[in-house]
Each structure stands twice: as C-alpha cells, then as structure tokens.
Length: 277
Ligand SMILES: Nc1ncnc2c1ncn2[C@@H]1O[C@H](COP(=O)(O)O)[C@@H](OP(=O)(O)O)[C@H]1O
Ligand SMILES: [Mg+2]
Image 1 (cartoon, rainbow, N blue to C red):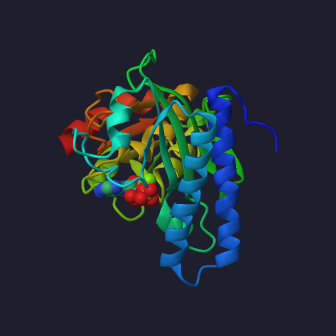
Image 2 (image 1 turned 90 degrees about the vertical axis):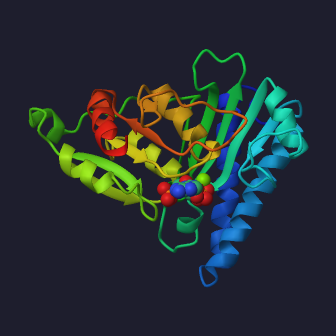
C-alpha cells in the first residue's frame, strides 16, 4: 500500500475512511447478537487503527482521543503524558474513533461516525480547527474539509413557503436537551431524533435537517471533526449562548452546541436564550 496523502485534510479523510472500513467489516463478522461486545470491539479497533497511523505518519503531533485513558479529565500536570503534551503542542489531532457507539451496535442503523480533526495553534479561526473528516461508513460517504460540501441547497418547500415552513432540528435519540420540546414548539420546528453528533451535523451539512441543538454534556471529540466540516461549508456553529466553540482546551468538556443554516442562527439563538438561559 502506498503512503497516505500529505495534505492534512486529505489525510484526515483517508484515516476516517480506513477506520470506517474496519468498522463495517467488524459489524459483518461479529453480527449484532452481543451488542456490548460489538461496541467495545468497535471502539478498540477504530482507536487502535487511527492511533497507529497517526504515530506512523504524523509522529510529531499530539492526540486527544475519546478512547485514551484519562481523556475526560481536565488537564493538570498529574494526568497522562498525552494530555500534558497536547497543551504545549502546535498541532493536536482530536479524534472520536466511533461516535454513536450505541447506534453502531444496532442492526440497520447508519447514524454513527468516525471523527478525525486537526487543531492548530496558529489557526485563523477561533475554534482552531484546520482540517477534519467525518466518516459515515454505513451511509457510504466521508465528508471532509479537503473538499467541503457545497452549502446545503434550499428545498423547494423552503423556497416556496415564504419563510413559513417547518424547521427540522436534529436532536439526540437518547439524551435530548430537556428544553428542546418547548423550544421546538415555539419556533415551529419538527424534531428529528438521531444518534451520533457527527451524523447529526452531517445531516445539517447535507440539508436533510436545518439544524442540530445539543446541551447537557459532550466532549471536544464529539464535535471537532463535524464542526470543522460544517464551518468549512459555511454553516453556523457556536455554543448555545452564541459564543465561539473552542478546542484543545485544558478541560475537554464541551457540553453544548448549535449547528445550523446561517439564516436560522439568530432566531434559534434567541429561542435558546429564552429556553436554555
Ligand atoms: N449528556 C451527555 N454527556 C456526555 N456525553 C454525551 C451526552 N450526550 C451525548 N453525549 C455524547 O455525544 C455523542 C452523541 O450523542 P447522541 O447520539 O446521544 O447524540 C455520543 O458519543 P459516543 O457515541 O462517542 O459516546 C455521546 O456519548
Ligand atoms: Mg462521540
């Protein structure tokens, strides 16, 4: 096999695609009888593959991965050497080897993803993400910053409704924010339950939904790669109070976010202020 791409965005896509292939094969081989075993094996196989390739092809870069021991802890001098090195590093790969682990273990579901993002100290944007890829293996696609998808086209319904159409908002299947039902009712939105932060943000990118709101808990790896793609596409991405999403922070918790079409951002942020404030 030849070398992977040199350019970081293409390398992220290559890595997400490879891990995705391994996960698809694993699902075929193991089947769905033991969901717990499939989840554990999926997390491990994807993490090991991505970790190995990063060590081989980007040995000078630091890594923040969901599956590393201690990754959920805020950085202090006592935690793992990885965490110490990432806070001083110029380039940090932020990876979620299997986002939507629960959905991965359920037969027929395609709302799970592989996240590979690169944060750089000298990035021109507040979020600091300079490359990213979201693999959606069971949807047979990888979205990446190397070829950012076109801004989601307006549907015929939206174009002909004079602004009065129903907004579609993706939300967690298992842990939707408590305020979301009331917020949706107020703005006239229809909630679309889905697994995986990556699959939900991908659905905004492709125009299948108009936005994604989450609150109540998440980590940097859950959103880094999909936010890199969404912002490269021209979509709005922020915390639910409208402030900037920031990555490679000492504390990797990043509990809430809004990703949506630009034209909806001010309306949704105003509603969030009323319902989640
Ligand atoms: N309240 C919460 N606290 C911590 N993590 C959460 C969370 N709600 C969602 N997440 C994480 O965000 C990702 C998407 O969640 P959901 O499918 O519910 O939208 C999942 O990642 P993993 O599947 O990688 O664990 C999940 O663990
Ligand atoms: Mg995740």
